[in-house]
Image (cartoon, rainbow, N blue to C red; front, top):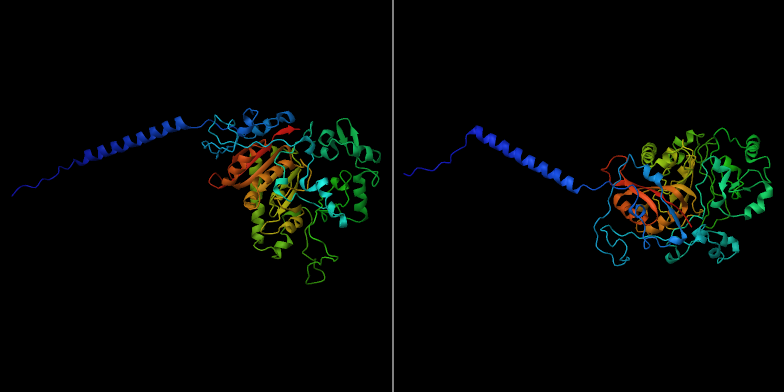
Length: 490
């Protein structure tokens, strides 16, 4: 009977030794390969500003070099020294036949559309308040004085509204209350008409607003004191917001005291009085009693405590307030301009929700205009006023009824996701550029895919921008685009 062949088994000690050596060799080889790959393929540090602003523009990238002056904003780039700039842009793309072949012809980076400057005569353009367009409407019931927006998309401008030549950064608050640069609003008509009434005076390069006039020749502050002694308890915090009708442009006493906003209504008003909410007892306040300022800001608004707003509970309100305090701290860490005291005064929250952004800035010398989009799922404007803040409605598919360069900072929380498939992203961004002053800041919070598309547009709008992480870390899809509008004039 043949003998069966048996394999020779290795000695146990030598088998363990050879196995360990093999594992160590493979681990060393993998580590060396990884380190070599990192060394060969690690990118150079990314610049803080966008490629369109950091490189020297060629004639094809600057459509109107003769009519505009561009100055880089070095102060914005310095704020990134302690932050990480995230790059989600494409670095390799196929040629685009719709763009000029000479733009970026030697680069693998995707091409950016450069928006030209509008004509210098449009430096004060307000799209839905155009005088010539409004005069086409009937005089009956003063319809021609109402807000009228261009009816067709082709009527919208596809250029950047320039600041007037010689535009200068506004004075800081509170000095800006009483003085402004003449070059920022170069008009002499008002000075000539109202100069003798102590409303406004021209003194060299500046316009001064004495705060007097025919109504209160002793000054607006003295006039306010008279009101407080006669009727309105202003100093005890029971009055926070006020509507100043017929305030004009320069003579309002409320510039010394409070915030005011007038609103144009599209709906025809009936000749009736809007009823107050019903009460259960004679001593009960209709609509709910409000706390005095400043407790009013953080107290639970009556509309929430009564359950009027669907889905918004007291727990949701207080969590929202705490969340926005954390977010504003993160904003200041990524925007030195916002953190710098008195650098900014006029702020706009384009999708304000419950007003948490404005509430978190209450200790800063700023005021915030809160916007509730007309397409918002929940109408929270009443809550904003109950907190002692101010706001209005706005359809961001249309232009805002405000003067160009009104705001120092724009904040947009999930605004572009809200308006997805409703109107063009480009239209909203161009309107943002119109109402933002040179060297103003934009903070956009949204999904990373949305922010990448936004940056692709703003890189052609003379904005220096970067994408930074969410306050909870890099593993969140929601991130921030922080941008500064470069200084340039007509």
